[in-house]
Amino acid sequence: MGDISDLLKLHDWICEKREQGAIAVLTHKNGDMDTIGSASALAELIGHNAKACGIHISKIAKRVLTQTKNDFHLMNPSNPMWPRTLAGIIVVDTASPSQTGLNLPEGVPTCVIDHHQGGSDWGDVDINICWNVTSTAEIVHRYSKEFNPEGLGAESAIQLLAGIITDTGRFKHADAGSLKAASEIIERYSLDYASFVESLEKEDMNHSQKVSIAKSLTKVEAIDAGNWFLLHTTGGTNEGVIAHSLLTAGAEVALVVRRAKHETRLIARATRSAVNDGVHLGKLMSELSETLEGEGGGHAGAAGWSGDVPAITACSGFIAALSAVRRG
Image 1 (cartoon, one colour):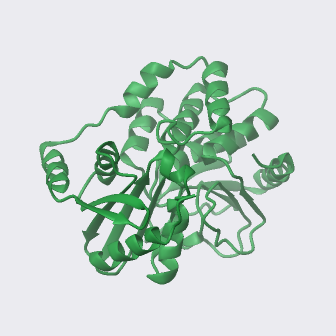
Image 2: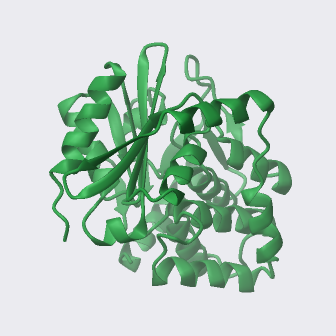
C-alpha cells in the first residue's frame, strides 16, 4: 500500500485545478475495466468540472457502463477535443504517455495514478502515484475513503468493484489489500456481489467468434520455456478467453499471438503459482518493448505487448525472455 501523503498532494492539486477550469480524467487506450472504472469514479469524486474520457472502451467495460449508466466521453484519437478551460489532466492506470493513444496538450498540468510495477515513462509530471497494489481502482477507493466521507454513487462504486475483480483475475491474483477494498465497497454500498459477478462473467459471443476461438485451440503448441510449461497459439479474437482456456488446460504460462494489419499483439496469462515462483509478465512485456520496440507492460499474472514485427519474432522474443526467468 502507498503513502497517504501521496493522496493528500493529489487532493490539494485537484482542489486547486478544479477552481481554475476543467479536469480530464484520462484512461489508457485498451479501455479495460480498471482504467474505465477508476476514471469514472474519480471524475465523480472531483465534481462537475471533471470528465472521464479516453479513446476506447473494452467489451466488459462497455457492459458495466451500460448497466450503471455512467457518463464516459469517447475521444477521437486523430482529433481530440479538449475543453478550452482545461486546467489539468489526471491519467489513470497508464504507464506511459503513448499508452493513452493521444498526443497530450503541451503545458497542461498532469498527474498520474497507476499501479503497474514494470516501469514508468512519464518523466516530469506534477504528481506520479504508483502504488504496489493489484489495481488502480484500489487507489481511487482509498482516496474516496480519505477525502470524500459522503461516498460515491452506487454506479461508480460498482465500477470500482469491477475494476478490482477483473484486474485480480476474479481474485486469483488478489492480496489482502484488494480483498479488503472489495469487501469495503460491497459493505459500504450494499452491493449484491453474487449477481454482479455473474453479470461480469457473461460472455456474449457470436457464431464467428466461437468458431475463431475453437480454431485457436486446435493450433496450440506446448513447450518447456526454460523452467516453465508454456502453451501458446494464435488468435484473432477474444484472446483473453483463449489464454484462460490454456491455463485451465494445464499451462503455467499461456500466450496468444495475434497479427492484424501492421501490428502484432501478444496476450499472456500466468497461474498464481507461477507468479509466486518468479514470473512477472508485466516486466517481461516491458523488456520485450526494449528489445523489439513497441509497447508492453501489465501485471504479474496478465500482460500484453504490441508492435510492428513479424508474429514469429514476437513469439520467439517472449519465449526467450520467459526462459531466462529462474524458478524461485
